[in-house]
Length: 171
Image (cartoon, rainbow, N blue to C red; front, side, top):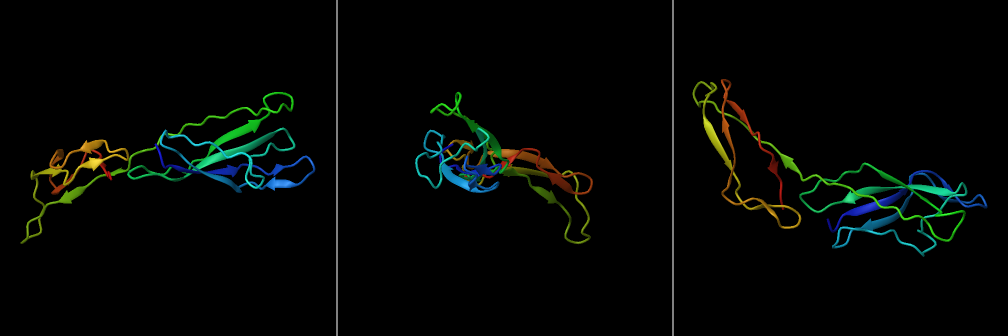
């Protein structure tokens, strides 16, 4: 998914071998945004936001989602990762790959049917739920077409009915 934002957050104090704390636990070290291919890569080079390996030989960080395109929902659950040398203090650092699945936002609808004189429940009333516009995913895929019947409801003995189909938010 392109356009998803992530903070890279220190999961522990990251200290330099000389004892200087480079990042405190909870510090946002970098902000990344996924490209058209749905991937993002941490930045390397700038002294003020590179990922450091702590004096203990590794650095524990996490990706935390900050932004998603509609109609996806943000999942702020940290995705932890550790960076460490590929060998005994080699120049190369192991590459870390992470994947996250986003949920499409959806809801439901309910209705209560009563008469206008006694305000009593009216059972066995049928309602069709139809899309009033094309309901699309972030990438333009149509979930429901305008005018498409999405669900059918029948009120119960209390005059109440609720959708059983997911009503996706769409864009």
